[in-house]
Amino acid sequence: MDRRKFIKDISLIGLGLTLGPALLDLSRHRSSAQNISKLVIVRHPKAVENMKINSETAKKMVDKGIMQFTGKENLRDAWASILRSLSPNDVVSIKVNCINSSLPSHPEVVNAIVAGLIAAGVKENNIIIWDKTSRELARCGYKINTSDVGVRCFGSDESGWGYDKQVRVADKNIRLSKILTVSDHIINVPVLKNHNLCGVTLGMKNHYGSVDNPGSLHGSIFRFMQCDPYIAELNNVPEIRDKTRLIVLDGLIGAYQSGPGGRPQFVFNSIILGQDPVAVDYKGWEIIKAERQQHGMGMSQPKHIKTAAKLGLGINDPDSIRTETVDA
Figure 1 (tube, one colour):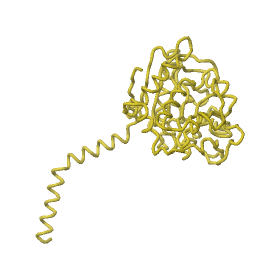
Figure 2 (figure 1 turned 30 degrees about the vertical axis):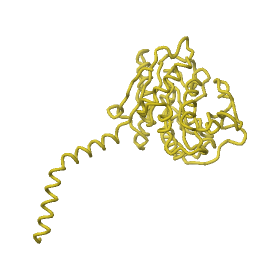
Figure 3 (figure 1 turned 90 degrees about the vertical axis):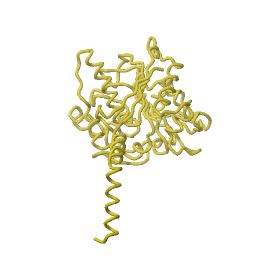
């Protein structure tokens, strides 16, 4: 080794020794940040009164939640930061859950989301509120609108829509709703409910309403399969995985048994926001499990939450989920 190279190598070693601890700390911080999922729970003690939703309070909760989640000081900037690379003609769809008319994604919550999207610059007619059928939507209090004026609201069964792209989900071929495929951004608005087969029906299972044949995704031996791995695999298709911008879990009223049908069974007065579908489902499961325990019923972690975590769709480790609880 010549003298010049020796001096250069010694200098680099010295620099590494000087900066080493700082570089290690930065690496640890970056790794930690990448493995933490943030959730925001917004509460209000009078969001639900006599099993009716207070629309003004629901809006305050959604607004508070999105600003808390994004760290933005106003509604426009908060929603704009969620809608990455928003273009003037982008379609933003809101996937609701209306299979149970007694316990749907409440229109009061969805209306608050719509107001936020419009504030962020989304054109009214480029917003679509949707589920599997228009009949189910109308039954849950949504006004059907297929026109080119105002916010649109209709089901995949509406004329001219239906299902188009075929995808493989585990060992099944299913087709995706055309509403899903034309969407540039998706806001997922599930409900706080248990499910007799798979444990819970929250954000990830809400997309069973996004396909033509959800029955095929339950498994041939229902109680053994518990919709696994179908729920996780469905949420791993690019049309869902890459377009979902936010999950807003409507936890104002919930059900802890006999789901997904049946009457509402408890008031939780909360809305949960997150971008990690696994973490949102995990938190929803914890809430339902706690309610079941109060009634002498146990509940293990649903298989599909574990499978989705293994697929890399999100986190189901409670130590890696940072939950911020705020009051509206």
